[in-house]
Image (cartoon, rainbow, N blue to C red; front, side, top):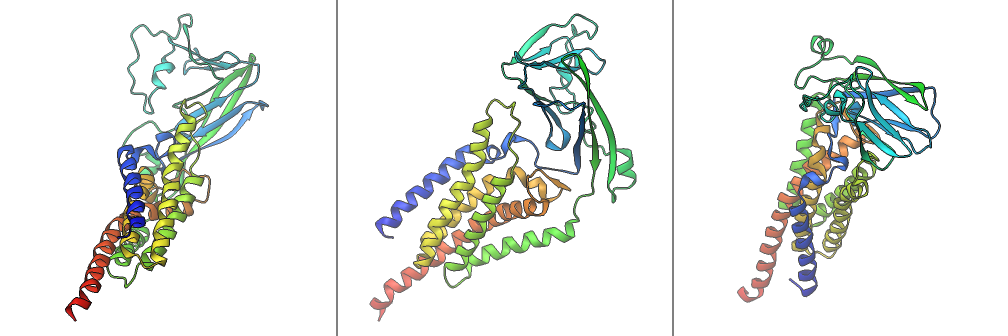
Length: 353
């Protein structure tokens, strides 16, 4: 191996070590689920609130309000008790509202303290200095973990509307209704998609172990880098109320950028006939793809993917990240071994002659 190749190898191993420490779970923006058979839709805010943003996040699992206006927006709890105040002074939450504790968990499993009383005078606690907040409002999503809605259990092959909901609020003392609906859709049939994933994995492994040169593996690297960029660009940003918003976005984009860099090294090496370096780049790129794709692997077997782009494209990108990533790791090791064997044979051939 040339000195230049050795320096490139050191850089690639450094990237691999960095991502090994980071772990797969850090890649997904916001850290939530990426796929679901449920889906939430916000139908309207009545009356309209200019300057105020109301969003549903994570298939309806969270409701987010961003109120940068000078007027306070209030959200009552489930029995009408004071719960949230969002406005110029930040976010204030009533510690004596049952909703404060129930809304901390997706399934309402947080224990409500004994002194909580929805009829008592509010005990306001500031939870943010910014006028934005996201919470698990249990009117917007299905609450029973591990159990389907009865209408879905009766007919799992058809789409269903599970509920139409309303979350009341007040804005400057005036009543506001936030309305939406929760739906369920059947997941894609496994017999249709899993063979394609298997073919992608096997094809990538063969490109490394049995191809005559490194260029087929380089073609897979180009495909993988494209998928990594598509996945990163179409992954929704986390809630603006997340304290580490910028850090979450950067951590999600970093694996994709490193895949592009590593793929460029591998393609350049393949064009120069350097099979060992191409194989090493494939191993590192494959690990980076797994880091980016594994947190979102649930989109492969669910009806909806959390994406800002087409659903099909989101699933295809994750399939390349996971199946292609694993294939590059295995195929890259094969390319390294095969290319080293060829180098040894070529080195000793003149001596044998």
